[in-house]
Length: 344
Image (cartoon, rainbow, N blue to C red):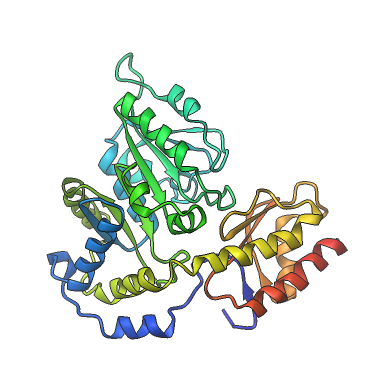
């Protein structure tokens, strides 16, 4: 995408920084399918330790990491519970059913505002020819929930619900780094609440590729087989792992800058009645239900002004801040978007 555009579509559009490219070029590599890539091994050990788990597995994408984790927790013809807007059932093209034979059931979309009692009431035990619930999945931060952060108290209550019912708890933690910065909750505190996590290096942290599955040593040993079955075994992947390690060292604390930029955008569009949720992190959700413009028309008008935004539905759009945006880029978006919204 030419630099003449201010790209607010996603935090996946970033390019490796100069320092990250140097780390990639200098990476020590081996064959990761044989477990012999030292850079991958170091990344996996580092991420496992950050979340207080025994092991982690590097995967090419967040979707693959999620689906590996779900297959670890839910057997074919058994059930996963999650919310209706969860990434694992909204943006992974039916992979839970296609690859894992997993049945899913959802509670109404409420973003990060989960009621653990509602979730508890949905859990189905074995017997009576019902599909038994085996796992609950939550998303931190919540993508379609406008980057909302699930409070630590809610997650602890969900852990209690899962323990009482004897089911597992998975975290789609693609943007858990943002939650960590926003609420100052240690990553290890999040980690101890979940049986498995998936964490992404290319959303927010700026690495070009990769996510990790985090869990027990036994689960990650099984995960390695599932990854291979899904075509995710990579060879000299240390070049990518080195980018991830650089991102972890350099790009977590700076997420606060992205949050501040998102807050500026939210403040600018709020007077037009399109701000869908309170902005906590780097996502600004726009609800155009009551506006003259629909999402595609807004996106087209913004593009004509050199600003790219994401269309999530007929009346739903999204702005995302990331390390590829300068203050001048945000100023340009701040000049364009209110003018477009006001003129419609």
